[in-house]
Amino acid sequence: MKIICFELTMPNVGSWDGHWTQEKEGHYIFKHVSDKFFKENGKKLVGSWYYNFGDGWGALVSGSVITSKERQKLSKINRGFCGYGWMVQSIMLVGGIYTDEKLKEILTNKEATNNA
Image (cartoon, rainbow, N blue to C red; front, side):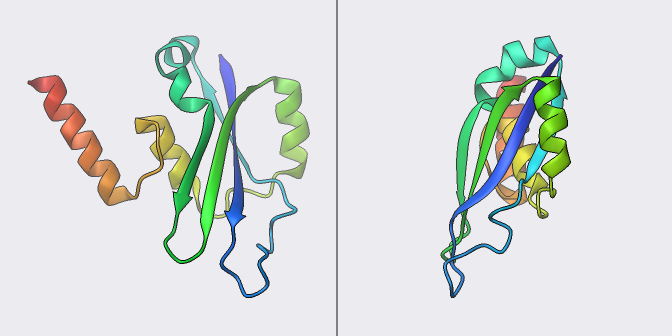
């Protein structure tokens, strides 16, 4: 098993003062993936993905493999993913951040291609 740590940051902030109120907090989601899943999908789980909200805000999700000791340390400062867990789900499913509508479209097309 591998532990993948996804971290959320907001490098583009559209607020009046240019700050995200939670920017100094740690925002993590930890996923335990089997060695087989990692071997087949590792490239799409490790890296960085940017999502533009279209209103001056932009989120960056970074994924990396960590040890259980690192997870324990990060868990102590973790403040959650602020409702953006769907981004990690999208990355795990298709290797990028997509809205639910676009994600359904991608998965439907992928399924159609696999069945052809």
